[in-house]
Structures are given as C-alpha cells and as structure tokens.
Length: 101
Image (cartoon, rainbow, N blue to C red; front, side):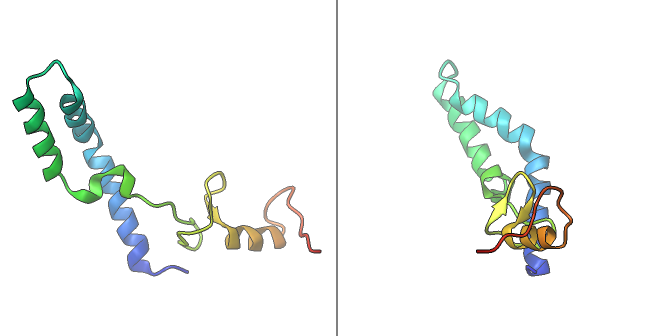
C-alpha cells in the first residue's frame, strides 16, 4: 500500500489539471499561433509559466486504484500487476485463471 500522502498528492494534481486545463490550452494556442505578434505570444508564454507546475497534465502519474502503487500499472484495468494477480487468484476477474509452471 502506498503512503496516504502520495495518493493525496496525486489527487491534488488531478484537481489542478482539471481546474487549469482550459486556461492552459488557450495560452498554448496563443503562444503557438505564428500569425499573432511576437509580444503577444511572449506574454502568453509568461502567463503559462506563472501557472502552477502541478497543473500540467504531464506531471500526473497513473496509480493502482486498490493499492496506490505507481509502478507496473495496467491502464485497461486501472490496477497494478500485484493487485491483478491477487484478484485473479481469488477468482474476482472473469476469464482469468491461475497459472504456474
């Protein structure tokens, strides 16, 4: 189980990303528009830099919904490999059978 503080930090980042998504997209569009004057594009980049760092979507990290583990995460199932194995062994996932060799 991951530390509660790390899980809460990730939730906080998700809220910030959602809050600033529209503003960030607008500023990026202005900054990338070649038809606008250089000063306006530069001001948009400065405003973009003043936004909180954690409001960027690239700072999000996938975590297991059951344990909070950040590594070995299956996107389709939203769980880590360890949680997946435990659920499969317990018969919680249809079609998955225990295998050993």
